[in-house]
Image (cartoon, rainbow over all chains, first blue to last red):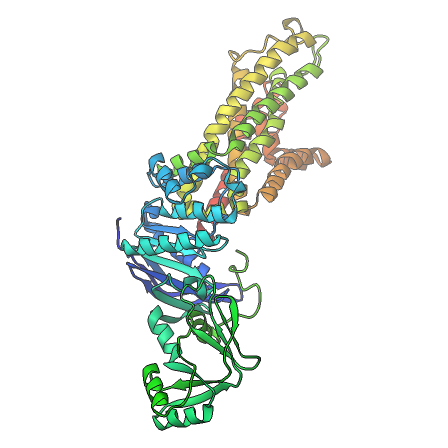
Length: 352
Length: 257
């Protein structure tokens, strides 16, 4: 690996006609971790990536890869591996032919091409026309192209798009291992859940600028704010006991519906989402089962073990005490609430 | 030069490159042979230009050359591959120069084969139609200065057509539009002088038409009656190709990919 493993984006501004696509976008991607690049559609993720790669010119600001502007790199694929658009290839060329011209453009040989073909598991399809590939196979081919130059920096735009569950697991493992090797990995997504369990750090963008640049753990903790859900058949007594100890208690709803998040993409589906109204049942891992009746209280200001101790001491019955950990999705929604672009066709992102 | 090697790999891994070059040769030779087969010179004093007849297939073969040249740039825009290309090779002028060099080389090679085939076909067919020394037509031969000029000039003509196609395709970034534009520039502009009644404007339009002026290089007889001389005519086409390539190159450098 050559060069520094960083991407530095500083004050990027870019206008497409009436749309301000980038409005002072600034962030740094550091080596050794997977950085998620998230934001609603039209937030400027793809435009930022295109500016970093020298495909689009910014009106203002700079983008550096390993401290150098992309266009000054003689063998750019040895510095940055990028996957912007898996369909960006000529359909009548074979997968191997596609990788071969890319290799030749970087002074690499056919041996390296066969290595990356092996690495992404496309060996049996390497001599077939790329135009006949499924979206998932094209994504693998695009990732092979990104890995070709063994670059210290990787930048992937929506890489799990179109992959089957097996492919999703594969790419997550790949991203984790690339970061563990000390590379800087930037992965964009408009679905926060896709990044849960993969990204260590998050850059959340909206309307062409950075809304949050934070670690995943910190972000979730900040949004959860130490809330604990308590289910009890005697809510009044419980509220009195807990309020006396200094907690803030709210009734989430009688006969509340507790749904435990367990999305396919959200590996750590342990953040209960409370919904008021309806019959009392809980959904966990896709299976529904009845829960003994009781009201659900949301307690903040006290840790779970203290709540259990207090309720036990006052012999208040309770059936559940669960620390409410917000999902990445909830954190994201809270952050981007004001930044969502509602109108369709916001510039180039919609065209892609 | 890395760009040259990569672009060469691109061309040779695309099956259409080979078939288009083969089609250009086949079409040129076939049309040349057909033209030689339908003219006849029953007696001395017919005013035909035998080498020009023998090379008339170039007018058809150039269409395939245009398609090949346009696809080498426009095909990348149609698929979005241009972004992959420019990510791998950010030096845009070098990319365009590599494409231009390879197109020149490939069309020159195919053009040489097409021209040699055409001359050979005409040499075999024309004498049967009265083009004999008794009627003032020695056997067609590249040893004859003007015939050699017509043949070599035709090869250069095809290479320049390819560069024009590349320039236009890079400028408009769409294969269908580029092919339409270049065909219009060649074929429509070539008949326009004959539709204009004013002789001054007729000659002027003839002189600036890339196809009429460019193919003046094939003329070996009645040169004084041509609006433009053989090499000067080829220069007119070269100016068109240069302008196309320059416009395409400037836009290629300046625009977002």
